[in-house]
Amino acid sequence: MSITSKDVKILKNYINGEWKSSSSPYTLEVPNPATDELLTSVPVSTRDDVDLAVSAAKAAFEKWKRVPVPKRARLLFKYHTLLTDHHVELAKLIVKENGKAYKEAYGEVQRGIECVEFAAGAPTLMMGETLSGIAEDIDSEMFRYPLGVIGGITPFNFPMMVPLWMFPLAISCGNTFVLKPSERTPMLANRLAELFSDAGAPPGVLNVVHGAHDVVNGLLEHKDVAAISFVGSQAVAKYVYERAAAEGKRVQALSGAKNHHIVMPDADVDKAVSHIISSTFGSAGQRCMACSAVVVVGNNDRFLEALAKKADELIIGNGMDDEVLLTPVIRKEHREKVLGYIDKGIQEGAKLIRDGRKEMKDHPQGNFLGPTIFDRVTPEMTIAKDEIFAPVLSLLRARDLDEGLEYIKKSRYGNGATIYTNNARAVRQFREEADAGMLGINVGVPATMAFFPFSGWKDSFYGDLHVNGKDGLNFYTRKKMITSRYEV
Ligand code: NAD
Image (cartoon, rainbow, N blue to C red; front, side, top):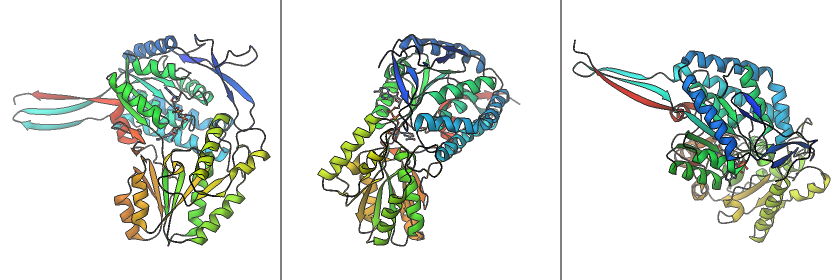
């Protein structure tokens, strides 16, 4: 934490429809991960800033919840148009602050826009249920209502998509929102708020408070916050879940991952390699659905050779340059942690078959690390167990599908898993037995779209209702049951 010099712009919070400086003098620098250029500074906001935002959201809720649902949906339609008009600008901003490749960023904006499309369906989504004649002259009806002020806390790796998993649906359901974006990618959140205001959002309906754990704790402990949506790393997700639940709040906390891809002997090698390369090394391995462990069933030298060859051919560089696939990790400190994992993998006896450290010297600026692959990894090794969140791949060997599925079961995480095969029996066994919530059949990144829940299992998720789809709707609404008697 530092105090920013006068010539660097400090981001403002967005509270009650106005851009406000934080009450804190402390800031964190936001460098471009590919060039080290200082982009801006983000304030480390205080609980006073959180109080201001929550009271604005609380006051706005009283009016917003009474706005007819179709009218609320119309705000989302306008927002959709604006986001679509600014698609390229938003994608470029993601590349700048997050470092991922432009193509990935463009896709991320599209995923975010789809969440707005889903949220614009609020009039249909929010319909209740009725049953006449549950007893003599008695009918039952269910209506949906919003909860109040929702706090959203988001990670660095999807600065557009993850906030849009949350606030469009929460707001179209009639809630108001306080967003705490990642302090490592905070710029896009302000642009999202600006465009939301341009779309006609009333003051206080969406607020943005920048900062770190003080803002998070301020939201978790605030009596006027009804629910918390969190996405981030495992230890923080568990903490957020426990703390918010202890405060009596509804909470969904999406967490870390270790996604296994099983390559069956009959897999189409070229296609499997191409999916695995882009899933493992795209976005520098910093996707919660990234492949980080490949389970090779049987001896498959052709697969191993093709994988090594493709990894060697990967173009490393700034995400704004065409053809680049492997971009930098988010911060130098994160890369240091990853280098520690590489040392640990060697110490624990895994075979380093491709050492991405050698590419670091070709990129003196930025936080680059070349594609790194370990073979002969066993499920007990640290590199097999921990989420490394970087372009580091572990290869595990399995006798058969049963053993591969056992590896997935052993993992504490259960976000995603994929199988590469055209064998229907193997597919069915995988679907029935893989111990993870989002499965891919010949799909490298089986992330669900806005209409379905993002349904991680085990330590990849804490809570009951996931983000998106009907789970998201149920999370952001509460039900009221009416039992009425009119004697006919
Ligand atoms: P992170 O946990 O460091 O940060 C997430 C948020 O929590 C940020 O807003 C941050 O300010 C806040 N935070 C961090 N430490 C905190 C603390 N001690 N107390 C209170 N708040 C704290 O996560 P990240 O590095 O930004 O994001 C990457 C992680 O997010 C990975 O583990 C990835 O798997 C996970 N992720 C999961 C999903 C999913 O759907 N399961 C999606 C995207 C990212």
